[in-house]
Image 1 (cartoon, rainbow, N blue to C red):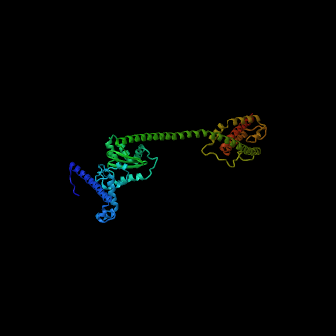
Image 2: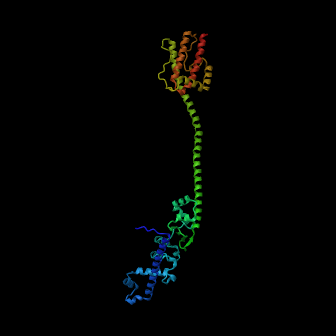
Image 3: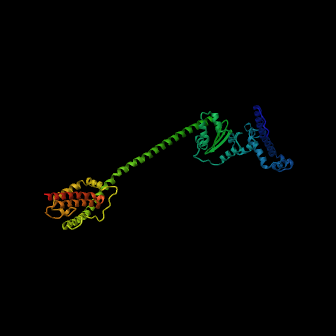
Length: 413
C-alpha cells in the first residue's frame, strides 16, 4: 500500500468523515427500519399480493425475516422518540453491528456502551446480566478495584515503579486503547478515556472519574505495603526465636552430662573390689609357692612366674600407672597400711605373700635375695593386674614392702 503523507488537519478531516459515514449508516438503518415498520403496520405488502412482510422483503430486496426484524428493532430502540426516521445523537458514532448487538441490553445499560467499546465487550456485559455473580469476592467498589490490581500485578508494579505520574499519565498506562472492560464479583467495569462506567449486578450503571479510581488505588497500595511490612516483621521475629531455641536446648545436655560422670564412678568402685579379691588369692598362691622354694633352697629363681599377664594400656607406661595408683588409692592405702601395722607378724597370712614363720636371723646374702624377690614380685604384679584393679594391688604391694623391710631390719639386729 502506498504511504500518503498527511497533515494534522487532513488527518482530522478523515476521522470526521469516517464518523459521518458510520452515522449515516446507522441513520440509514434507522430510516430503513422506520419504513419497514410502516409496511408492516399498514400491511402495504398486500398491494403486491404477499401475505406477510417477510415474503415481500425476500422477493423484493432479498432480506430474510431476521434481518427485517432487526431493522425494525433498531428503529424502535435508537430513533428519536422511538418512532421516527432520525437516530438519537448519543448513538450516532456506533455502527450497525454494535447497535444490533445492543438490542437485547436493558435501556438502562445503553449508557455503558460507548463507540470505543468492542462487540466483545458488549457481549461480556450481556453475559454479566444473565449469570449470577460470585459473592464475597468483590461486593463493593473498593474490593472491585482491589481485585483489579490483584489480577494485573505487572501493571501495578509498573505504575508504582514509574511514580510521580499525574492522572492523565497514569490513565494512559492503565487504559492505552481507550477502552478496557473488567468483570469481578458483583461488578462490571468499563474504562473509557473520559470516565469509568460501573454496574452492580441487578442495579443501574454509575460512573466515577479517574481521579477517584486512583485515589482508591493509592489506599489499596498503602494498605498492602503495611501488610507486607507486618508480615516481614513477624517472619523476622519467628526466625530470631528459631535461632534462640537451639541455644537454650544446647544448655540442657551440659547439665545432663554431669549425671553420667557420677554414675561412671560407681562401676569403678565395683570393678576395684571384685578383681582385688581374685588377685589377692592368686598372689597368695604365688607367695606360698615362693615360701616352699625358699625352705627347700633347691628351687630356681624365687621370682613368681606370671602365666598370662593381663593386658596393660599400651599408651600408658608402668611408671605412669604406678603413680596413678599412688594418687588414686587415697584412703585405701591408709586403711590397709593401718591394718597391716595392727596385725603385725600375727596376721601375715592375710597379705599378698605367705611369709615363712621363723625366728632365725636372716643372713645378709639371704636378705639380698629376699629384696630381689620382692622386686620381682612387684614387677610381676605390675604385669598381672589390669589397669582398673592395679591401684588396689599396688597399695597392697606397698604394704608388703613395708613388712618385708621390717623383717630385714629385724634380721640385721
